[in-house]
Length: 182
Length: 184
Image 1 (cartoon, rainbow over the protein chains, first blue to last red):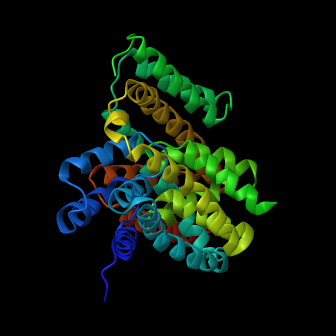
Image 2 (image 1 turned 120 degrees about the horizontal axis):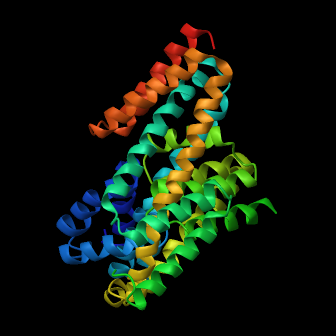
Image 3 (image 1 turned 180 degrees about the vertical axis):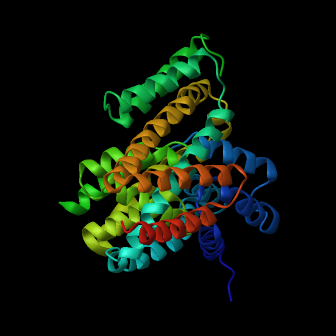
């Protein structure tokens, strides 16, 4: 059988998509193992670049890394194969699950379970928030941006899109003029 | 045209989400709730589903909302929408990624985005907390105390690095037990 790089990209990223729960950073060790160690599609150095670029471009890290590695190995078509691969497992599972959710969501026990779960999810988001806050620099600039973006959405109901655009622009201006160090 | 609306809404969500995961919550909240595709309760429920199934939150929630509002075609359009911005941006960047990575403009944008995302998640957290506790308050005082206890316990456990799926399962079990015991 002819060995196809495209089929390979699709299958490996489907495997990565299938075995990463919760997405995000959980996926990086798996990508590292498959793309760097097993397949040698990219070097360990390039993997660091992938993570840095995934962080500073829009969208989930999983998609960014799949597209990046796919395009490096197999051009645009490679990128398409890797990206479809990483998306397809979650897509199929969620579509199947959506019917079950609809069928069972009216049950009393399920409603009780989700009532408890919502308090648990609140804890998960709280934990994620604290973790992000600890990692972030805390100079006057960062604190001001945090307060501003919180107040803009929570108090003044400004769209998150405008807040994101404005804060990115502010960062660009202040870093480029040397007022704030990157 | 619902399919186009799904595609475009999730395209915007994909384009303006940095860092993935919970960073997209405020956007999902404003965009999805303004279309009335899902209530805040349903979004929070779905976070739990997404944590317990493979793949990124973005893909999971777009597939789900697409499916419940416009069937399989809806799921395809919404997911395509959320994926396309990252796909296109990365294809563009992949050619000169070293220059991109060390560009002062990108560094500057990230410098503003990182704290912005924290403020945005904090505002999402606040609205979800209000929802969780007000809803329990409508039921009874013991219900509020149960929600507070679950929140406290699960916060403790998640800082002890207990896996999110286990936290969700435990919260669900407590919810069912308390629900029947309190007769909510």
